[in-house]
Image (tube, rainbow, N blue to C red; front, top):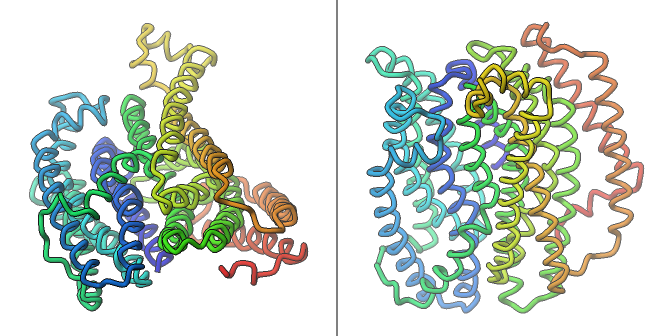
Length: 528
């Protein structure tokens, strides 16, 4: 189901590239959507789910369905009330939010005003999707994974309709075509919530919202949420920071980062979110039952699966970056230069794919035990590292390279002016996120080991050797094919597609074949 969701998301981005390209208007939409999408990540894949699911697991383990219903009613009531206040405040403060998140948009300019208007339309998406996250958390806790995994398809369908039909209508009525995407986001939030409610009703848990801050479960979730607001969403804080920085760079930088991030999200969303979604209820249930051995074995399975997938996924994205960007996006308004710029940032950020996947398991390992402080410690360090790495890399580009010095001279010594003259600087923002991602994963792993709640199962040395040799074989095959087909820009779409399919198939076959020849047993993938 998650695979279908990611395929539809890829189709959506293909259409974006052809219809809108890398323009100032598309930069505005990318900046705007970061804000409600940030809250979506906090709820659907972060803070709320990490706090709500373990508490729900405790109530469910007690076997009292009425108590579970009361908890759901109270949580729904408090969540709706809080979200209404946040949404109203964000709509009123839209000009200020845009100036904070994208300071490179000049207040009063056409781009700035477009961003403000779109934010007022898109922000209610955060309200609907957060409620959908609550419903999805309940369904996942009862083993109903399919419907929550399918619901993101509705976002992609709504956005595709907005791009193909809404954009021409907006242009006809005298509006900026990208304005249609804002209404697509709003519609998607409503659809994703409505889609899941029938499944919840069949469980007998359709909420009747009640405002009750005194309820013990609500208080416990609130207590857990405060630190998890930060700890579970470090990557999102880093993305917001990089949106801030990218708005100061040459026009198109936000869009280039967006497309590289979308390709990165394919393995992360398909595997990372799926594994994290499954493993959080499992670890929460094992912890609630006092099953330390089951908890440790489940965590071991998740970590191995992340590395088994993450290492070849990262290698593939690094070595096939240009092939992917040219084959998938370089049509219509998305130029060859846009594809190359996006490929640079994809290479930089893909270096941390294994780390990003590991965090999807390591963070739930703490939250399932209702330990919310440790991920916050790691998160604070990670965000600081991202900021310092960004500043350091940009400073090095400006003062230690001939291109940077020339840009400074051309801009008369103005840092802001020089940044607008360096089209490759966005790749350094992606590299900073990669550095921060590895920092976060390594810290979480060290804290988990130190706490003594995880003991690795036998066979890690053999597993590392198998994956290492298989990855080396994949690198050799992909480098040979890159040398054979150096320039994807020169070919027609079907010629690009056939060559890209050949690269993917050859790399995957080499990895799988060497893995099997080294004695890896596919039955090891089964969680015991």
